[in-house]
Image (tube, rainbow over all chains, first blue to last red; front, top):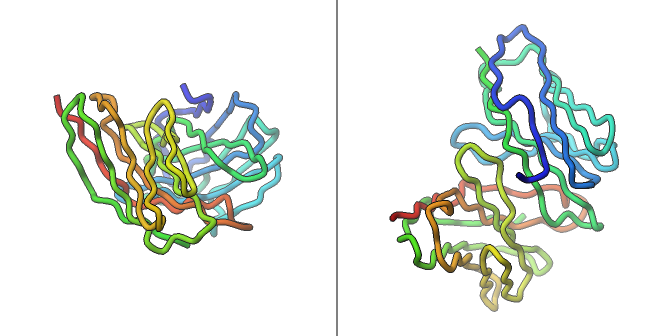
Length: 114
Length: 112
């Protein structure tokens, strides 16, 4: 148990669906992240929120829309995805002190887009 | 940004020390070396990090060479649960300090 919980663990969606991934951290951290891990590719940073403000947005297509309503919760809203978006989506959190030292990851959501 | 080179895979016998090498020959003086591991179907797990001194915690030891161009992660008594992909990454300094440059890692298989 890492203190970062992601739901759902698995998700299958069609290209016209709208779904959301949820992440919750119980560590009192003030930064939260979304990463994408495709098969046989390195982890890719998608978004970073620090103190509930988006501070990093790595040229991610607009069909991915993050939301951070408070420091403990992070969402990734998905719409009109493509099959190449199938991947493991990982949420992480950290405490900035002021520098990021350790990331704590959830178990991820395995997403399949049909 | 410094990049790292790791062997794609390694085997180790259960109970023995697992020594995972990492080459980071272009590392800058103020960049840290981090190690994470990812067990199958889970998110990565932080193991240890260091700047230039050797570091030890309850999970592992990190040995960084004096010129900082390479390092070794040591799992002193490997168990089957240590089977995972191990990532050696270097953290850039400065404004983009959220970025961790992840490579392919080393797949460590612990054999009974």
